[in-house]
Image (cartoon, rainbow, N blue to C red; front, side, top):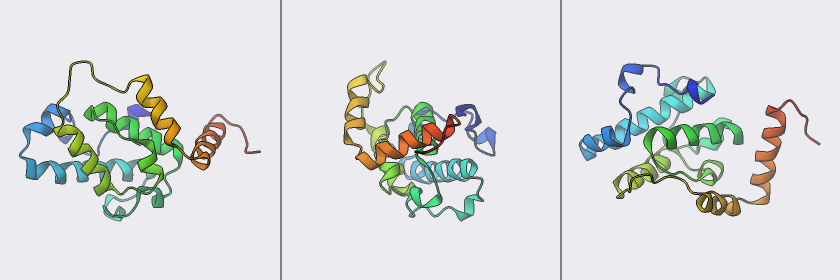
Length: 148
């Protein structure tokens, strides 16, 4: 599924990297990321990008937990940032998520930095029981199973 994560105008996203974003003037980064994020969410949910309000929580667009993880992983992998899955499930908007990405992009990095097992475990421990059930149910359904 990650291979499907490309913006409609591929020429504008071919160079999408942490370095390319940081090369942009600071005032342009937010707008560029908001447009990119809006397009990715719209593409994933088969919506017109104009139907995606930057300030509406992404979980109100019908984004299930499995799709939230796909979106999160695509953004992290492409931009070299860390986003918490709980932000997607707890009602962060595109504008909120872009702010997190911009903050992460401006932080100093070290070579080889990425999500560690302890970071992943911390993130899992922050999930509520309901969020865990939703993730597990989505995985069962995706695997062809049924809900109990």
